[in-house]
Image 1 (tube, rainbow, N blue to C red):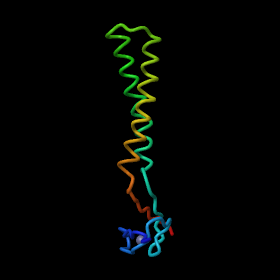
Image 2 (image 1 turned 135 degrees about the horizontal axis):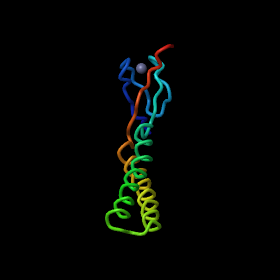
Image 3 (image 1 turned 120 degrees about the horizontal axis):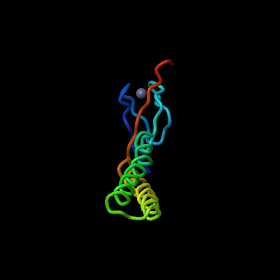
Amino acid sequence: MDTPLITCPHCRSEIPHGANVCRGCRAEIKYGTPKFFIWLGLLLPVVVGYFIARFLHLTVGADETVAYVVWGIVTLAGWYGCIRICKRLFKNYVSFIRQMNR
Ligand SMILES: [Zn+2]
């Protein structure tokens, strides 16, 4: 079985996919969803759910309990959706992080 090669953007070395450190410049190699998107995926459904619940409660006149339940459902569904989307989007995503003071 052939291991696909990935190219380091910092030093142009070719490294087998799956390695954790670049052979050429010691850059750290990360696979999968970047942390920023994980945080975004966690925060966004909470915020969106809050505004939907607020809208239902204040504009539509829904019960406070109903609003909280909707907030919970939107948040959970949002997390689930974000995990699925991130996994698909970043399935083959590789990022190289070069440590500056080394
Ligand atoms: Zn490198």
